[in-house]
Length: 404
Ligand code: 3PG
Image 1 (cartoon, rainbow, N blue to C red):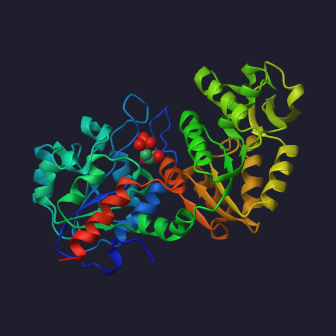
Image 2 (image 1 turned 90 degrees about the vertical axis):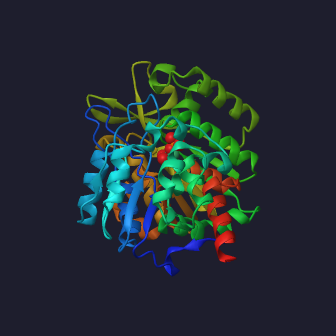
Image 3 (image 1 turned 135 degrees about the horizontal axis):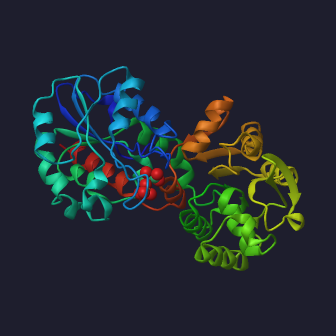
C-alpha cells in the first residue's frame, strides 16, 4: 500500500491558488551560466500539465550559496514556457511586494515562477516544521495560497521552510514526481534485507563519500564499483596512479576514501585500466602505465568487462553519476557500455541523477530500466531508510486532512 499521502489523482484544485514546490535545480555551465541539462524541467512540466484550472505559483531553489550555479531563475521560466507551450511568467523576487501583486492579479490557468528560493537566507538552513511556519517565506506567502503541492523529491531530504512550512498550514498534495518515486521505491526501502551493488560515478565527491558510508552502514551494499571523479579519488587513495593524473586535489576526500578502503576492503572495486587523452584521442592504459602528465577521463575496456561481470551477479543495482567525462565523445564509452549492460541485465536497476537520465534518453534505454530518478542525495537517503522531511510533511498533512 502506498504511504499515506493526498494524491493529485483524486484532487480538484480548480479555482484554487496553488503553491508548487518543485526542484528544477539544474546543472549550469560556469562559462555562460546556461542550463546544461533540462531533465528536471521536463519532469516538472508534466506535473504542471496536471494542474490546469488553478492559479499556479511555482518555486524552486537553484544551486548553493557561493557556487557558480547560484543564479536567478529567468531562463528556467523560458524553458518551462517552451516545454509547456504556455506562458510561465517570471518574477525576479521571492517574497517582496512584486510577488504579492503578481499573485493577486493571477487568473485561473496562469503560471508564475518565483526567483531562486535560496536567495532568502532562511532557505539555506534546516529547521523544524514548527519553526518553518514562522519563516518569512511562509508567513508572507501562505495567506495567498489555498493548498500546496510538494513535488521536490530530489530536495526531500532538506527540512527547509518551502518544503516543510506550508504543509503545516494547508493541505499538502504529493506531486506526480514524488508519487512516482514513492510508488517505485517504497517496497525496496521498507525491505531491510534488500541489498544493492552500487555503481558510483560523477563529481560531487564529498557528497558521494558520505552517501556510500551511509549505505554501507545501513547494511545496503554488497559491492561498490567506482568510476568518474569519485573513482579517481579512490585511485588516488590507493596510490596506484600518480596523483596528478586523477585531477583530485581535495586531500580530505582522498583521506576519507583511504579510510573507507581500509575499513571495508571487500566492498570496493576500483578500475584496473583507464582512458587518458593523447593528442585529443582516447588511449587506454593499465594503471601501472599511467604517467604523471596523463589525465584520467574514463574507465577502460578491462574495467568495463569486470563491472559487467559484477552486474551479471547482482540482483539490485543502484547507479549514480557518469563513469567518465561523458560530454566528450572520446570518453563516454564507460558510461554508455555500463548503461547498455544494465538495460539488458536481469537486475532491478535504479539510476540516480539528471546526467544518467539524459544519457538513457539519448540511448532510448529508459524503458528498460526499473526506475530512472533525477534525484541524487535525497534518493540515497531514501534508500538508507532515513525519514525524509518532505515525505513526513505529506504524511502529516494526509493524516490531518483525511480526518476532516
Ligand atoms: C540536488 O540536486 O540534489 C537537489 O536539488 C538538492 O540540492 P542541495 O544538495 O544543494 O540541497
